[in-house]
Length: 236
Length: 293
Image (tube, rainbow over all chains, first blue to last red; front, side):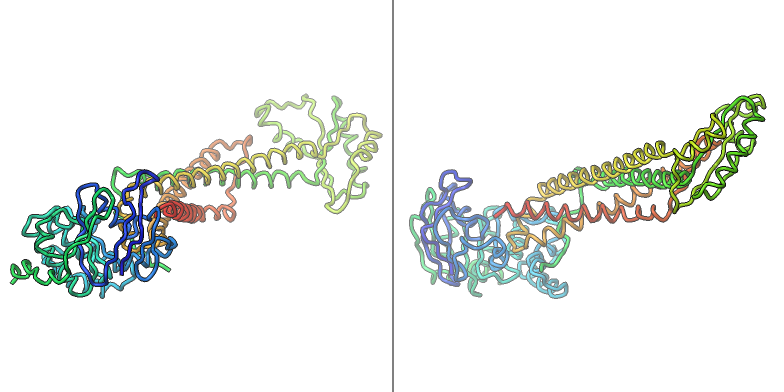
């Protein structure tokens, strides 16, 4: 599903923030992306959600090298990827419903279909009473859940999350992680960049570890994920 | 083809684009005034020029009124016998007074004033009258006869008319170019203001066309709103100025009449500026987005 082959990247022809990265993620897998600040986690995610192009190497996604995709081909590819940003990046002038509906409206979905799906998803993330709230009135955890709902509304093939638990309390972090695990069980390939080593250990998903723009090792085992049921227990 | 929906926030008070409809209103106002001025002058020039074309003015000067009156009758007879001349008419004393009054003042034209005799001659449109030959013929009747076919004056007149019209056209083109520049500036400013929104739209799979559509709609609305305001203000100004001119009318200034049919073209100005703003915004957005990943 996702394969990096000797990928390097630099911003504006400056020094390389990613250096000779190679890895392969199986379809339906879940991985953590770890490493210290400045290691290149966000840059790696940017390459995966097609916001940047590598300076060299191949990025195989959806059966093709997306690094060489023409500019007008990118929207179609991007619609297959869901992204949860560290700073949420919700549109402040839109309600929670409208923010979550954005990917469907971009894809040309009809009004009734959009409302039905969006309201159902917002209920699923526990925001049924915040549907018409503006982001400025939501707490950090609520914003994060809106951002996650927006990222998954179109059932993307790949879900990328950059520090999704960075702005929420530990309890909310576990609840959000439970959401990711559930989505992964539905077949979505998930990559989560995080500093939270305790959470990584708790979920037990494989880990891509970056240091100074280099991928040091991949560790962990997918079968451990099924043991993660903190959120589930809490919801019950 | 991408669908269109408005993802842009309503314009906040601090945004530069908030002023754009008013700038467009000023541009349309100036354009409409320039065009109205040009149309009024064009219409006036046409009337004045057509009233002089095919006309010859014959003037007989002299201090002995009886002599020049007798000569004028002979000249009138000679003119009527000249091929190509359709109408010959000696202007009455009252007509001469009316012509002179604006310059000399009412009551200042006395009988002892050496006013020349004027003969208004209308030539046939099809025929050519050799002015030099005609003058030589008339000089045999009176040494003090002068002919004027207004050709020199008309030539200057046409030069002025063309200059005024091309100047008005130049002003219109400059206003249109300035409007394009303002829309480009406004679009770039708005894009900079909403760069995060545009980035999110892109990352969620929005095509450039979808983003451009939102901008082109917004700027078309600015152009239309500004255009209608500007047009209304220009109409008020033109009617106000015409009323002032009518108050002045006392013979010196002929009251201009609005060429209503031609002026109906001004009704398209808001549409023209709206279309210009729309196309400019689209091109600007597409070019700016093209530089992004």
